[in-house]
Length: 299
Image 1 (spheres, rainbow, N blue to C red):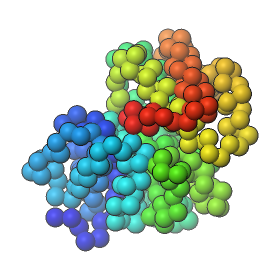
Image 2: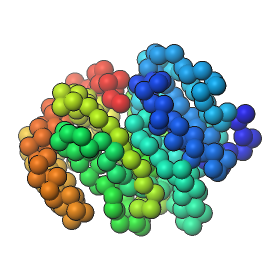
Image 3: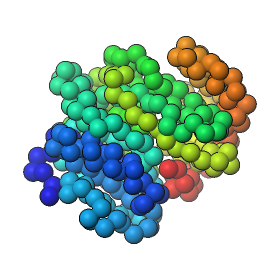
């Protein structure tokens, strides 16, 4: 039975479906159970939903075929009933006290509209696993500095007050993108806080070919979102697409080296640059011709 007044809503979107995300969902349910929260899964996989007996009574499973994860995420936010809405991904494992830590963090910072934590790598088998993780998560790889920031984790480890989601931009039907939504919160004068004590494990493992395609489609999607409101940064990404991979690589190295990842960084550099050029190709395609079908290929 769903609680009448959940303390926290944990929202996750998937195009992988059940049973691929069984372990992740179990971790979300354990975190929600400790604080009287709910879990909302929005699913576009077209696979059968799990039998209700396999889910906690406080979990809602919504099947929305043909939607992208960005559109699914917006649906999940609309379905959330709690005053605090946490979002993560379907390949992330959260600790049992994840909900407790978010509730405590918001109680300690009543003016914060969003709080985000840090991320640890849960897929460490191959160099490609590390390279992809470093590229995407570099700004929030644990440990991070806690305090007021201009941007938090993406849809990996972040939570919002419900009022911060009422005016969310759906970008002409493309859905919601956490980085752009957080930017809008800051532009409206809202406070974002980073908290390193709130950590999750990002356990995404793919082949190099799989990562290459994923980075291309994610970048094309991002450029497609930006295409409708080109600012100076967007124009730079377009006109200097050939240079951006080196700039991003340098930034990632600077961020991660001081956090104790030098040895793995050195081994990962060639693969990181390869994936960054896959992103550059995606950015160019997105800016020139729009997102195409790429949003539905990001997971």
